[in-house]
Length: 198
Ligand SMILES: [Zn+2]
Image 1 (cartoon, protein in one colour):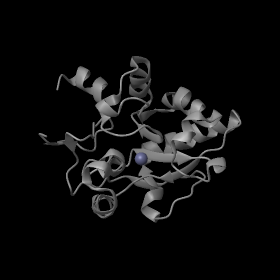
Image 2: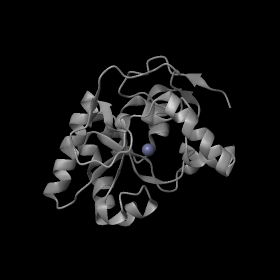
Image 3: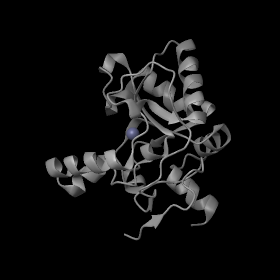
C-alpha cells in the first residue's frame, strides 16, 4: 500500500490512517496534562495538545450535566511507545490481525495529541465495544462534535477506516470541522478525501 508521510502533522485537521503516516520524529509542541477524571497508566497518556485538552474538559463537563461520568484512559502516545505496543500485539496475534485494532508506528492518531480513549466506571474503565450500547456511549456519539470531537472509527466502517469499531476513541478536529464531519455521516477518511481531493 502506498504510504504518504504527512507534511504538516501539527495541523488540527491532519488525517492519519493506514495510508498517511506521521513523521517518526513528530512530537506535538503544546502537550499538556488533561484536567479531567482519568485512569491512565503512563504519564504521557495523560497528555493532549492544549486546545484538545480544553475541549475535553468542556466535553466531560457537558456530559456531567447530562448525568454521565467519563474517564480519560489513553491520550498522547509517542512513536516509540507505538513501536513497542504494535510489536507486542503482532507477536501475540500476528501482524495482520494486530493491525485491525492497533496502528503501525506513525499511523496512530494518538501520536497527534488530538485523540483520547475514554471509558466509564461501569465498564471497569475498559475500552470495549459495549460502550457504544450504554447511555454514556450513545450520548458521546450524539454530542462529541459539539465540543470538537468525532467518533473516529464508527460501527460498520472497518472496510474504510481499517480499524474495528471503537466507540471509545474520540479525535479532536475543532468544533466547526467536527460538526461538518458529524453532519456528513462520512468517516473522517472519506470526508477528508472529498474536501481535499486526495
Ligand atoms: Zn484510541
